[in-house]
Image 1 (cartoon, rainbow, N blue to C red):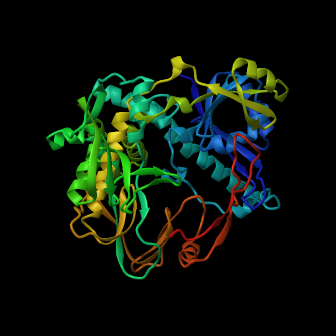
Image 2 (cartoon, rainbow, N blue to C red):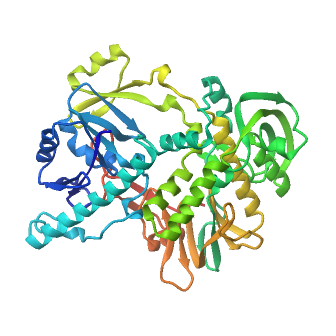
Image 3 (cartoon, rainbow, N blue to C red):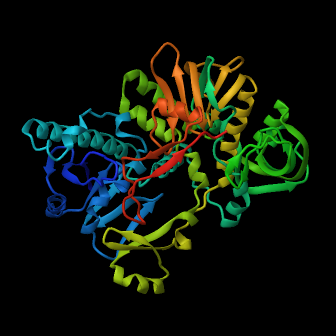
Length: 526
């Protein structure tokens, strides 16, 4: 296997309207750490090694690697995943983004602290500051190498975490990949949804409440039997038993009292407005709606029941035990790997290869000529043109979206049942509930049970993924502010009705255009 290196760069501190530039690079191979005071010297050194290596940077695909684009050669293929520069080459050096296999902040494993003020140009060359910066850079590289090399040694050289999870499942189960034709994917795609995020109230909460989480929600769902394979039967009425209903997909019309997901113009929501709609749901959700009294006037159009089923208990138990043992032993690295692997398998079954593209960088003067080879212009990447074309059909792999649809449907059904057991639900997000009292929920450390995450004395809900919950007896908050970086005080102001203009200090590096700063107005969502 090729030698593994890791790299990192330190830049000007983030500041509104300033595009940072690197002033030092670090490189570590497990034995030797080197620093470079220009990007040119960093690339020159890598080339001077004169060997085929892989260099990882954490979040490199959306930050670090954008600073080396001018050193790429034209007509090089590039792998881009979710807008992230995931894999590309300069000579025999392969550059990868470690975030694809370890999608967490480095601080979840280990990270030192530093005062970023000393990174300003007028301070960073002072001897005492320069040493602090080099030490900080080296520690980041060492910690990154430990988890990247550890992951590769344990799970193999994979481009993505989901790919590693699928290979591990095959090894543990002895099952081959379950691939399906495009027609199967397209047919069952309407039954596949994500998690449920909903505000049941908004504004200021001036009374005590609690926040609870499911212990490993999706892994728990994976321990149940789910539809598998391509063989299914269609009927216009429900099966007789719960076991059969649970492995079915149902198309029906009904008045849903907040039970079923529905894709509307504004995205996914759970209607509770007494209107009749057509829904595409799992049997898990149907049964949960019946049991909680949330289904009104159902009319069944079609029921698809599968001949075969699958569960992932062996996989889940393997990583649940690994995570538990690692936590007891204080083994951060193994705990992190187990946590990530445990939650990364089911989504692979829903992956859509139609979303994958083949990318290539070319001299801008050849962009138009590339159209003759089936490429389309994607944007400018540094000084290069970026062109793309659909993945060749022989390279597309559809797995089994029915498996993923059933697993996610199970958790939405579990969440619905649980919300019916608590007092006054205030907010939910996929596997968590904020409520006035947990009442009849099972609170324990067992897989699939609920754990008490926080007891709060007050709070503010300004919208989906925008809240501040004050922890009882402490001067601290549990907050969420997706898409913006708001303090608890700012979230509270929005919850009171204020409109706040947010402008990011951190530029967004995009494959289609020059770095830019996100600016948006944030207001209360009722």
